[in-house]
Image (cartoon, rainbow, N blue to C red):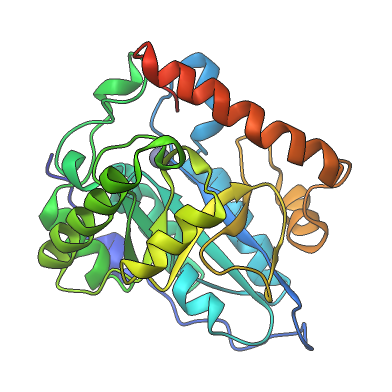
Length: 282
Ligand SMILES: [Zn+2]
C-alpha cells in the first residue's frame, strides 16, 4: 500500500520545545502505546484507534507540561522529563495522520512493523479491520526520514509467548533482517505482538540483537527493570488530554499486582488454546 506524507505536513514540523519546566530524575518512564490514528476499527476494537485531532491535543498537553517525547530506544537512554511514544502495527495512517501531529510538537516515536505484512493489510484483525492498509517499504523509509524509529513487531503478527522457541528465534531474525534492509537502519527495538512476554522469551529477543522490547503492561516502566519487557500505558479515544497528563505521572491506579500476576498466565493459556483452534486475537 502506498501512503504519502503531504509536503504541507512535512513543513509543519516544528522545533523541539526548549522550555522544560519539569526537572529532576525520572525513576519511572511513561511509555505510551498507540495503534491506529483515525482509521476505523471493528466495533469491539474501538479503543485501538485514536482520532488525529485528539492525538494532537494529547501531545500538546504533554508538551505543555514540559515533556520531551521520543521513540522508545531514545527515551531509554534519556534523562529528564521524557515520555516514550510507540505505535503498533505500522498502519498507513501513521504517516498521514500521526507524523504531522508529532511534528507539530517536535516529537518522535517508534513504529513497530510486522515484517511479512509490510505493504499488506492487518490480516490478523477481524473484518473489516483486516482490510486496513499497512505501510510498504517506501512508507517505512519516509517514517525514518521524518526522524522516527522503526522497530520489529515480529514477522507474522502472532503471540510470541506461545510460539515454539525455534519459531520465535526464526521470526526475530527474519523480521530484523527484512526491516533493516527495508529501512537502512538497525532494528534496536522489538514489540511483542499481542503484548506478552516471559523472561525466557525476553532473553531470546536480547540474544537476537535487540536493545529493548516492549509488552503492554499497563503500568509505568521502572527504569531499573528488564529493558526487554518494557511496560506501556494504553491510550484510547476515551483518554482526554487531562487523563493523559495524570496517566504519565501515576500509571494506571487500582490494579493490584497480584491480580495482574493471576491474569497473565490465564491469558497465556487462553491464547494458546485460541491458537490451536485458529482464532485470531488482537
Ligand atoms: Zn500489533
